[in-house]
Length: 180
Image 1 (cartoon, rainbow, N blue to C red):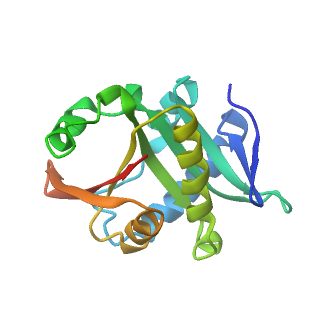
Image 2: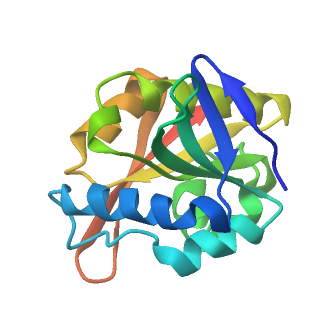
C-alpha cells in the first residue's frame, strides 16, 4: 500500500475502503458541475477500486494538511495502467518516447471549495517530481475540450497540447503532454 505524503500544505492519503465513499461523493459533485458530463460520468467505484488494488497506480485522496479536510482525489499511474491503444494514437507525434517511459494522470478531481486555490497545481507538481524520480520521460493526460479549468492548470504547469482524439459516441479529448 502507498504511504502518506506531505507536500506544500497538502496531505495525500491512499484511497482505501475507509475513504472511498467520500471520494465517490466528490466525484459525483465534480461530474454534476461539468459542462461535458454526458461524456464523462466519472470513473466510478469499480475503476477506482481497480486502481486502489494496483501496485502501479498512485490513488490518493487530497487533504488539507492542517484541517484534514478531504479536498479531492487523484489517480496517477505508470504505463501499465495506461490504455495502450490511446498511447499508440499519440506515439507518431512523439516517436522518441517509449511506452514504458510514460506516466499518466487518470484523474484529478476537486470539490467546489478547493477549486481556484492552487491545489491542482500542487498535485501536478508533486506527481511530476515523482515521475522524474522514476526516470519517466513524459506524462500524458486526456482533458475534455470543454474542461477549460483543467486544461489551463495542466498548461500552466508545463503541459503542451499534443493531439485531439475522439472516442466512441462523439466523445472528444485533448491529449496533453509534459516532457521530462
